[in-house]
Image 1 (cartoon, rainbow over the protein chains, first blue to last red):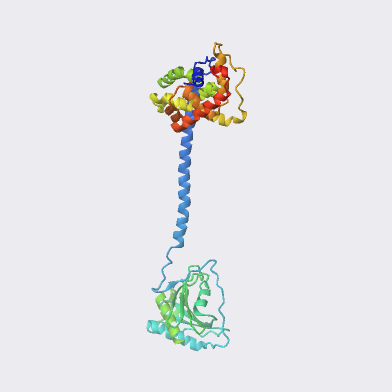
Image 2: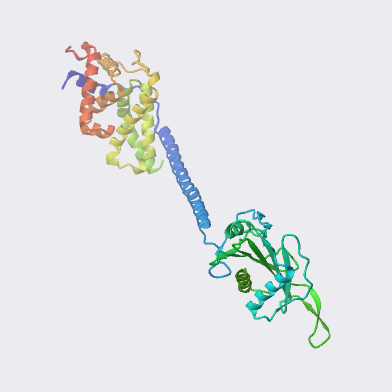
Length: 267
Length: 164
């Protein structure tokens, strides 16, 4: 063993000055230290639990957004038709307009066109002409026929548009200020039939619209209009009786679509 | 006093002075040595319920060494050379001059190596025990001890060991 290590060992025998530390001081400080450690451990657990909770909430929120974004589109009222998504604020683009070099049918022709189409659908049992023809307006012709028991009417407006049928149908997707979006089908000849959800903008009568975009630029707008109005009608046996509109639409969605197909077939 | 506290008080009475000597050998100041020793016992008390009695001495030495090294790291900027005059009155004896000279030389050794020398020779621990306290290998303890002794030898007054 070297002299240095022996000298080092001699330090263990060094005389001690009196100590000022008491065991009571040490115990008091030790208790405080233990308390701080326990409080720190509890705070750490609380922080971890809070962190997990916040993290879970943050991770869950995007998942819900994804689920919303990937949610299937609403079912269309007619099998085989597709739903057309409408982006808010759901205002019409209004790009349709008459092509000057294409003739419009006369009011009489339009009325016949509509009656024939409805007769084909329901066998000629309900539709009839009850009022005089409206005067043709510039750019379109509009006619209406009454529907017996439903106390409603079906209106036809014929006009023209520019562009392709699909392009114009897209532009008109929110033409009735309805964010629900229409449903659509494309026929073999390129005609686009676009059916809109029930239109509640008129408080006196329910409405539903179908638009038929012919490849040649002709547009048929068919409106099925219910009625809640009070009126008097002649009874078949003589006399007059009062009737109140049922408030129902005169055509079902299938019948309205069939009317549109008939109009598309005519030209 | 509770039984647990009484048990700790007995341990404190039996170990406090010896631990203070080891701390003094490491830091070279009785005031600092008492503070290091007190802090070490406070930490031991805080964990007293979890410490096995057969390992409490080893735990106390580990804590003392760590408190010393932590104190040296924090106060390195204000570290002073060993005081020429002891900061507390120490009973004189015939070998006090040699011990002071050895302590002065020990303070020239870097803290890490100094801790190895104190644990190995002042506390009289084995190389493996020192390695366990410092959390290093036995080889590291040996090399640190050799370097520390070389530094000590280079700065030691020849009269202290009598053979130089």
